[in-house]
Image (cartoon, rainbow, N blue to C red; front, side, top):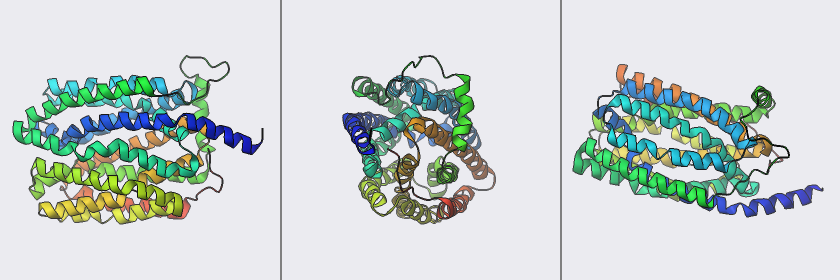
Length: 413
């Protein structure tokens, strides 16, 4: 078969999968509406029921390490046994944990539930692979950005709802009410997936339905070592970015309330504004990446992020904190879609699930180290220290991309 006819066939197959993008976007949007109500306030709730920043860091770190193991298996499941089944199963699995948060008020139970919830990450490689399979490579960044916009749009409205519930009913009861709504949204999201999602992995001749053979796992390291050098560096740089985000992600709300003096609803409004800005800028950013180069947009995004956390630490009012937080999301919004698209450009379709798993494992380990380090620094050396370290790590990631990452001339389908 000629290269042209093969390309046409790939385009026809991908066209038949376009409904997957709508399905994933719709399911994710419903999930985001529920999850967004509680995600902003998890750290605040955790310390309110007896936890502390170090314990919070340990919990998030252990959960991220657990993800490494399930992501490894998830990559093989995605490439050998299909994408849809594992995505649907974990969709229903995710209903359990907001219910546990709602009915148990002990921080130890919260830790157990959070760690159990991390097993749901097993579907992440399949989900990323389904998206990459379903979008033409020439529009990949813009397509991924559009998907992210639709998926996260409800997050514009969700945080203030959670903040209002906490303000009206208190941090304990308000958070528990929010968890009940989140469980209902998770159920609706899973139903959308089971009805409308289509499998994108062609059935293999003689494929079995058991777990991956030992030889498949042995080959994993060989496949990773044979990847293009730019892809390896790209994964390392993303790990640094994940570490930097882990340093500060769980502690923004604690710093805002304890140090700056904001109220939970104030922070909810700031987070809502962040999602609004992200929604407005993500698609233009994806278009710019496809037009001017993914590497350039990634580098620019990281470099403009670096001073924003310092600005946040120096804030002493709602307006100043909001400006710093909005500048941070304005600068950082272009990085993730450009990275995911460039990774897809560099990765052959037949190992895309496994490479995505490696990417997720890299992210999980880095985030685990970051949040653990951030919790220790926040509680022992001072609340501002993780935010300063964020800047240094981001600069290192930018330098790595500038020096060692090259965009491919021939992109993978």
